Length: 497
Ligand code: HEC
Ligand code: HEC
Image 1 (cartoon, rainbow, N blue to C red):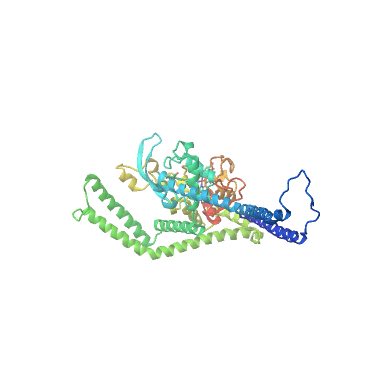
Image 2 (spheres, rainbow, N blue to C red):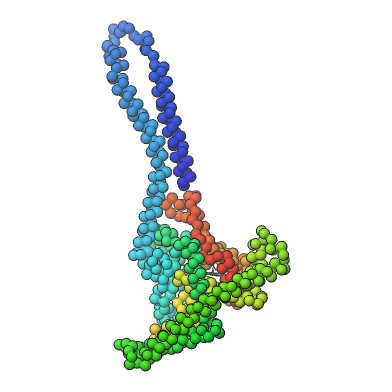
């Protein structure tokens, strides 16, 4: 658009220069070649009325007439090109205005009209919705807190059409259907305006990387605290269990007596204070050794990756050559995706699992929110049991989650991704782009509605909007949610399930 504007501007300036210069040259030569008039009619024919004399005619009257037409001509000659010059700017201004207005309207709908903000947080940073889940026969099962993913990275994983699908039809009964297509209250134009607003709140690549990394770090800490045999980890687990028991005892008191308030009189409350103090102390004692253990674990992940590369190069030294990076990556990933391939591989698969279930930004970077039933609402935790006054956990989740066992997206366990995708690198490519509307994938992947997001970078060419329609040449680039290395690690984890 800018290029177009500058060519039009250049042409306009050239024409203006030609007109002005030409005018000056013409006037110059006209004055130089002006001569006194020769051969006028000396005598007046008898049937003619005398008209003004030459002196009168060629005096002030003529000057006035010629002068005023020159002024008018000059005005026309200069203002027309000037008007033309301003035209692209006026177009741009109109587009920008419409853009700004649409964005503002979208923000208004996000905050007030549809109150997306209540669930998805300010500027789409992610949030949580308190909602009831029901059994397949429609009976109340539990009141839960369901993660509403951050939308400030939405444009990285979905095209506009894919977004319109979920806005129109909602999802899983927790994300309402907003568009008229799904029986919702908003018009197509309002949905477009929301997308304008969402474009304006997308975060930078650096912020994305640091959110993903903080989620991985939290996941690594949780994993180590859960599995380490070190005394400080054993103590944290024991203190957590004791604290949970003590808190449950107090809650049961509260359930029996509605006006119940904790005081020194109740031994349960004293026990809870003690349990809280023990847990705080255990966590404090664990801070330093835990940080050290996390960094050792990260080293193990890198070492596993290096071992896989080395194994590949040992089998085919040519893959170490420059220009063969893609083949090296594909071959190493094949090894990393094979169960029990080598000593030390485990940390790499753990990395994949942590990324799969990344809790950062309300699960926006995770796969688990769509592929693991119950993950989005911590379904296997005690509070569900307690706060619903129920005597048992949600039946499907009595034994905890089945990671990648399937929910909105298909079940990925039991080697199913091995039969869907012939190669690990092919599966990586699928996760990088996601499933585009109507496109098939793998050996039998259906052409769905594009609801499997793409986790690599996304380019949105000629999106719809003022001045943006087909052929506008406008291109938006949105950063990748995950790096190639992270996607590969998730693929290896999935292929060993
Ligand atoms: C009642 C709470 C609630 C409201 C209000 C709500 N959403 Fe959602 N939305 C959710 C939840 C929960 C999910 C995740 C659903 C899931 O886990 O399957 C979601 C998912 C989405 C997704 C899919 C994101 C992804 O990456 O998968 C988009 C886009 C979205 N919402 C946009 C909006 C917009 C725009 C509005 C306002 C017009 C809105 N939502 C209002 C709860 C809500
Ligand atoms: C917003 C929900 C959502 C999220 C988040 C999501 N997926 Fe999916 N996934 C789907 C859906 C829906 C399909 C099925 C697509 C179809 O059939 O059109 C799918 C399909 C797949 C498949 C193909 C399975 C098969 O057998 O056909 C794989 C592999 C996969 N997802 C991996 C992942 C990974 C890895 C992540 C995280 C990096 C992820 N998904 C995140 C919804 C999601």
